[in-house]
Image (cartoon, rainbow, N blue to C red; front, side):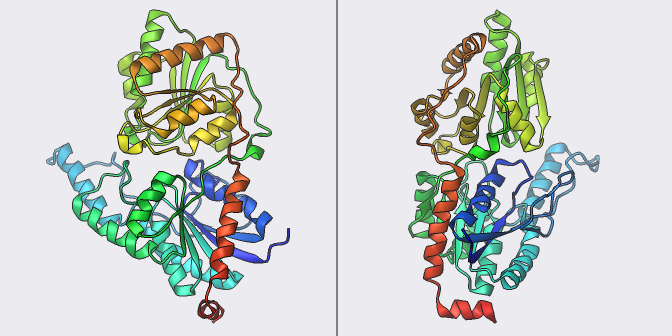
Amino acid sequence: MASSRRVLVLAYHYPPEPASGALRMAYLVKYLPNYGWDPIVLTRRMPPGMVDRSTNVARVGRAFAMQSDRAAVVPVLSSSTVNMLKDRAREIVFFPDRAASWIPAAIAGGVRASRSFGVDAIVSSAMPASVHVAASAIASITGLPWIADYRDLWNGNPYINEPAWRKMLLYGLERFSVGSASQIVTITQSIADVLSEIHDRPVSVVPNAYDTEEWRDIPFVEPDAFRIVHAGSLYDGQRNPEPVLAQVAALRQSGEIADVRLDFYGPNPGPLLETARRLGIDDVLRYHGVTERRVAMEAERSAALLLIVQNADPRTASEYGSKVFEYQAAGRVILALGPAQSVLRSYVSSNALGWFASSDDEIRGALLEAYRAYRERRTLRADLQDVRTADSIAESFADMLDAVTTLRSPMASSSLAS
């Protein structure tokens, strides 16, 4: 289909960056042309060591990074005092978040791209929240309709702890900036309910999905050990894999499982390695750090068990996340950890994906069953008929883009042309 309209897509995280948050907008960009929209991507500069082969991506600005925690400090200050001072500095400098220094370049680049390419609408995806702040300014300057997409909550996010004064300011900034959006969309109904209360307006839901084409040349490889793979951020320990590590250690010591290996891919491992040493399983646990996405995908397809770790906070019970869809496409059995009332429990069960566990007994039972499946060389056969694919994300956004551009006023059109 020939595209006749253009949309500016603001995405701080974007491939080849392997972060799971990069995928939603990447899928949107890939399939939007099928629905009459040509996307132009505005994102941050390429992380070091990565090669960008995209043809429709403008990379601007650079997020400010504070000095490393490993830098030398004045000896007379205690470590707790130093950490406190760093926390206060971050609270002041990084507003609304660590991507704040990207905002001016994003606004300038977005306005320039909008006028140069004759853009008809804007889509921005957060987090980080700075993306919505930039998009709000671009929409105000150009008069373009704007769809604000939330992959996570801005205010009320259980993974972000803010002092009271920042919470108040951030809440006000969210209401002010996103309040001007033509439409607000998010990934689950539970997040939509929270956003609807914050913004006092309806919020649309477009769930995450997976892209079947990504997996066509990723082969299934029989695991050479009882290999447990986790791919994704542990949020510096806020997602804590210790319950499953402890059960692996106990089952290994008792001889109930053998030839076990744990592979972790992704950023922010927190105390992962220290926990493995304390439990006596550091010889079978490998932390690979951030790798190319294909490396992680190949690991997933050669795993005996794929691990999802949610925050145990009950406030995370409404989270699906994007990882379960990726694992589902990988086609290997899953063990998901989280609060007992998590929506993932029913999703894992209804799709025959494996096990959801919120207690030591459930974890132990799942590991033993998965180990037996590994020994018997049984492979997961999940029912994917009702699972959304990446193309459906683009279709839903295209419908919204059609709607907001239809409602666009003549004044907005003349503003862009000027």
